[in-house]
Length: 74
Image (cartoon, rainbow, N blue to C red):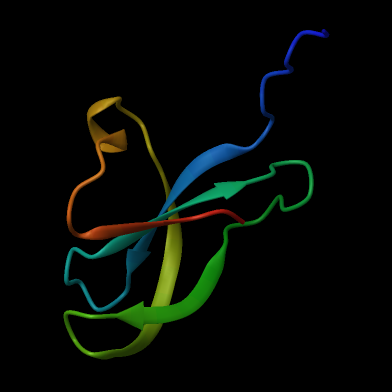
């Protein structure tokens, strides 16, 4: 049995441009996408699709999953 390799993908936070505080967490491969990620996704707090922009997750506290985020594998 071989050793498992550490994942190259980074966890990033996608923050809503509607300033509601809602965010998604995604995995991003830094080798494939060098620029900031911007995706239109659904924000349930304003009940419409808005632009979500990438922000880094800095602390271990930020990785705690709460009721206001959804986890997607990118």
